[in-house]
Length: 283
Image (cartoon, rainbow, N blue to C red; front, top):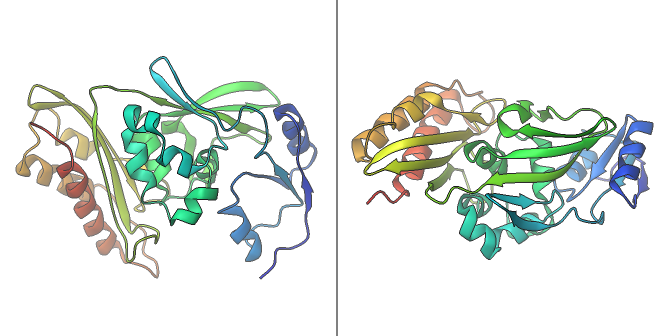
């Protein structure tokens, strides 16, 4: 299928892009286009204008800023996946991105595009929650930071205001954190029935801090505080991992669709939680 007619504009600055969005409420940003263009082809989205931000200066940078990793919104997912800096500072991102679609998708897809799209089954969105990341948005009223915990509001809806553009994503660097990531799919590259991003810190043998973020089991990616509590103050053992997986699964009420019923997704989350936590070195 082909998309409906639209205008195409390539602004030269962020300010120009914001002005274009403000002038046309039906305009949409184009970055990687891996979600927007298929939606247009199926007439699920009918933007009047595509505002292409892929070549805006400074929007595809990737660097360390003190104790944060800064990733520009138009940075390709594949560039993050293969970055030695990311592997050293935020390795969960590398593992999460390996589960995103297929190689061709990650080569075109962007970090900011995935976060702004807010797919409930998006690996990057779950990683953002687990890592306590934030996005910096720039719009008609200036710049503001939005924590990942406040970004995802509903399926494909975020706290971004009309006319705002993600101009940075910032990921805390936690040298002592350990991580795991797992998801359950029908086939490699499919959207996950359920998945989990885990970040823990240990005080001696015991878990002192835990962040568990699930994907594919609710209207948005979501933290699992009951699963986290099941780990705190305990070593990572088969028993504590089983308890956390059971708590995580029982805390969600996944939607039923053509791919899986509620109980199947709940069981998938339990399995993904166990697998993610078993990846974490604890000796």
